[in-house]
Amino acid sequence: MGYIAYVSMVPALLQVYANFGSVGSARMLFDQLHQKDVVAWSVIIAAYAQRQPGDAFDTLKQMHLADQKPNEAIYVGLLRSCSLMAEQEIGESIHANVTKAGYLSNTFLTSALIDMYCEFGRVRQENAIDENHLKDFICCYVGVQLSMATGLMAVEMSHYGLEYEGWNWFNAMEEIYGISPKLAHYACIVDMLSRQGNT
Image (cartoon, rainbow, N blue to C red; front, side, top):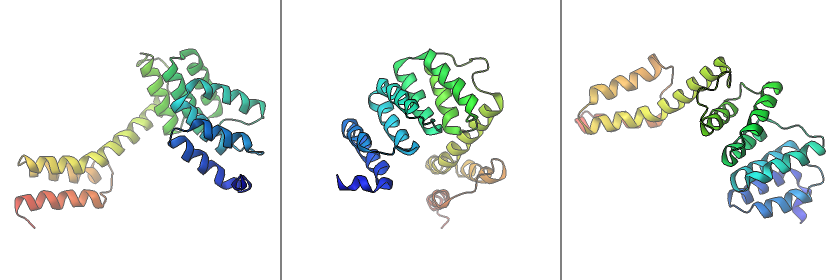
């Protein structure tokens, strides 16, 4: 395989194989790498986490033997594997490692931890997630959801003659929630106004 010489291409090829569910092909390519960087490890662990969760942990052991340290993306994949395999004890151990590494400010990791604890039925797990990180995650999540939903809500409200409420949500985006409207939001407002005959 001549493209193995182009090390920067390999993680992208690994990702392509993984996205198409060909974890075996991704693994063959991964095994041919002489120098495995953290990106390559991240991609192969994420691929296993989605298709063969048990193999994600074996790959982590191989990573440790290669004297490589997991990054945030690897921990996200491992937490997903824990959720899928109901491996609560391993999940708690990974949580401890995430905390020790100082990665709890990563929103994706916080989300993966919350998903895992919810999967285990431990929604109110005391001290599972630091309260400040949980608040940051919730604010980020709500912000993204509001941003996506506001335009849809404005259009839906216009279908039911609730243009005033649509305007209120649109104005609240920036004034209350600090979310700058994007082109899609303005398009929704134009749609709402055109339904009223205000073009």
